[in-house]
Length: 221
Length: 317
Image (cartoon, rainbow over all chains, first blue to last red; front, side, top):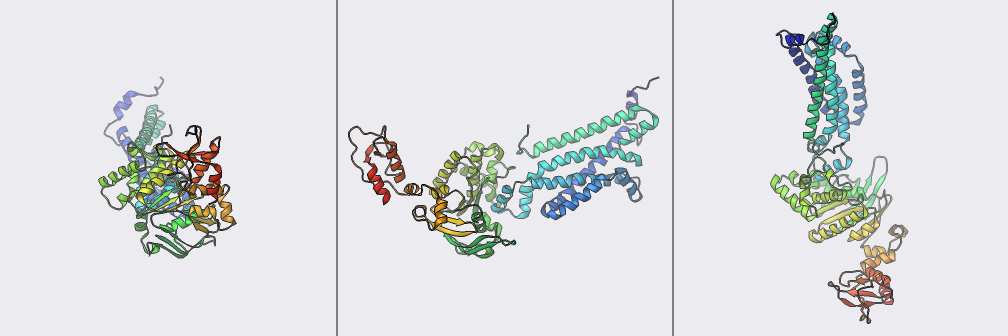
């Protein structure tokens, strides 16, 4: 008998079955493990990015280190951290935070570079002191570029969480392993659809935030 | 009054941008720094509001050395306009103009009211107040830049090539607007340009600088045109110096002859002796087939005529 691609009754039974692997719980875990690294990453990337924009000699080494980190396989990082943080969400969240830094630090630096020189000069000439100039002029103007980086970081974080399933903390990634072990497609399809939907929702939320935060930005069609 | 007292700016690599500059910028008048690129005119301007500090010498603002004043405080009392206007892209026009009043701690309402008043003053439609800079033309942005510089009513205004990025027609109208504003406001203005025509048109005093940051000549425009100090200044002033000088000689001293039978304002070049320069009168005569420039009053009534011989005589002084 041919196995159908999706068995709807499986979804109905497993959406919220009270166990730790019900789809709803996996989805919630997935959101936490994808969302925390991006938020923490942004909070770290802003001061680091500002430092790199201010002291140019810092920029190349920082980006170099970040690129090396980015090139490390996530599974390798999970394995190394296992001995420190164990089979917890933290073991996934820490590497994903590093990955999002690799995207967000350059985004903050590029954002600061996107402030036109004549605008910065005129802020100085108006009598803005450095801190106020940063908060009121430079950072607000950097927002569109930083948010573009945030979109990339959010989507890649959502996708990467799944790998954590190999150490038992992968959110929706569990469904891929489960489906593969049992040669049963429904969980795999459900997992893919939810991961993609999550990525689309995150992307959409950031786009809406950008429209609201930067009504002054030139719209490119 | 702004006094440059032996001011030199030398950079770490040994380049001298400004070399022992001493001059006075009189209160309530427009002083233009003009010269080719690399003459140190912008550096000199920026030393006034401490965007750059001199290596040697002093700059005094009403007798007080500017390096003794906190830079931010100093700058809030000095208006500044630059080439691309330098508007804040993320702020609405009204808030751009209100920048310095808000930095000075005015309340929001008062700062905005002041901004709206200035928009009118510089010839901007108040409807533009809620727009963002990218929605305005280059000329409009530059007017916003001027309004913003004037917002806190500073006695001193620094203008760094403010009109050189706009097209010639807009530039002319901005220049005329500035002269009209200055008639009302009497600010102490330092204006930097590389365009000698602009310098001569706007300046009460023109300081010509040469490459290496040395002062070549400082004089009123008419004197500059009639008596350039050396070959550099002569060359920088360019061609038609003689004709251009006539733009500073009034036509009111010309002796008018009664208009011959049949000579009217129609078909002749006209000039108004109460307002126009000798250059305009000469131009009027060149436009008339019989060489007679027709003098008219404010209402266009014919006052008399002048022939070319009399014009040339007047031009010789």
